Image 1 (cartoon, rainbow, N blue to C red):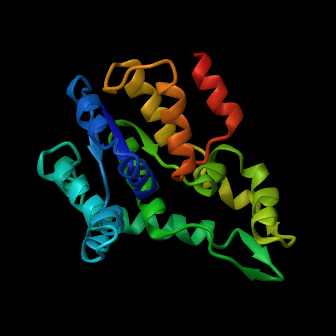
Image 2 (image 1 turned 180 degrees about the vertical axis):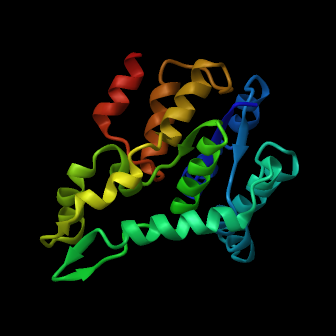
Length: 225
């Protein structure tokens, strides 16, 4: 096994809310790779919502994926939670001390997202190619387009912000995929049990409106591929 797909909570929630968690089992059948979640992500998608009636069903669905071995914890590769925690805290400190409003630092990332990046860094050290399934835009921008973070955060906060871009070099080597793109792959591989000319379009729009940070223009590009 030389590949791994790491899931952030947002991507799993988007799939769950659209009734698409079953595509993970279908995608893994012919994939020589691990589907992993961290302890922090497990807390966000199972341990915390399992006691809330509104979210209980989604939590059970994700737990079933763990029980069946579709999703696995880092320990399946001999990686200890303590190893992830150390790198997670480091990355959180950097990210949350990179954006200022009125001279005060603001928190822009959480433990779930940063635990995924920490696990990714550990897997890369082990020579395991990996990609992170994440729908949240801010974390992806830290890595892919840090020069755009100032505008994004200013628009989000409706105030001028200052970004220390030099600090963000620690995020430059991560790779990401959104739930929208996972659904696209599943569709192309025949893992979607629906027929009709608008199936792909409807799937992509469904992920967008349930949490994936994907533009209408990007959806149009995927439809034409």
